[in-house]
Image (cartoon, rainbow, N blue to C red; front, side, top):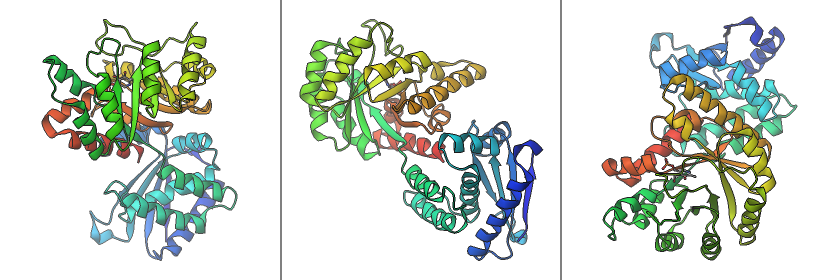
Length: 403
Ligand code: PXP
């Protein structure tokens, strides 16, 4: 049962850790009755795994583990199961964030890769993630280090269900309706179809100038959807009263200027904490969760903590509009740091604005972000493939990035 381990740099992991890991993988192969099988492990860093992730899977960001089965391509060397590539840098970062013993976390990544080599694929259908996870948990129960084992198992169980939700904004269906001031297309129909496509929530922005969504839309959508309604709005006495009457699941507070084409930036909380706090309190007292739409900015997120809001939606617009790779990388980094900070401060973290089928992957790979709020790109694609498919495709991209 040879287990070949190759390190792209000696500094990544100690020989002692490698020897211990090897013993546990051997135990795993025995348990799985793979007595004559070989696997190759490559331990590398974020830069290298990003290159491979981009080249082979078209995902331009670092990941924790990649697995390449050999048997399918070359049945003649089928005693070699394949190669598992792990970014030790990423594994260390993640084990720290999730507060799981590094050795156990690494073992969990090897186990995940191993089941991929055995042809399990959590991306192949709705039930395959459950089957793959069940096998991984059974195996880890046998081979994980006692210390933290329970924590690791609970973490993996939770992570599999860790939300990577998609809330679909149907404003622009109403934009088309309002272009002719008629009664169609109806955002209510869009909301129902979005749910059938897999949306986890429906978002509507009741703007001060009512340029697209109207009160009637909000009322009917609240009545008929089966998921949750998220009402976006500015802080305004009438709108707060309206929200308290409708009782959406969540209100997302956004800054709003009548002249803007769409929401242009996150809220500026400087000097406004008391005003926002009052609105949050009033909405919370009516049983409504409150989210604040904020730029990926440390200062804004720390100020938000003083408002009592439960959720933060990180503005991804600057990332989406970045014109060069360097700028995009820089903006993505800001989103990642902000998501981590917000989560550490106890917020539920969402993200949105300007996300489309090309740029969603890197943002969806940020594990702290639980929900994505996406409108324009989905409604645009729906013109050609229909709402259900447009939503389904976006959701698949989100789940795939979560790998
Ligand atoms: N999140 C917020 C707070 C928004 O204001 C909007 C736009 O209404 C979105 C997300 C969705 O942005 P997009 O339509 O670009 O997907």
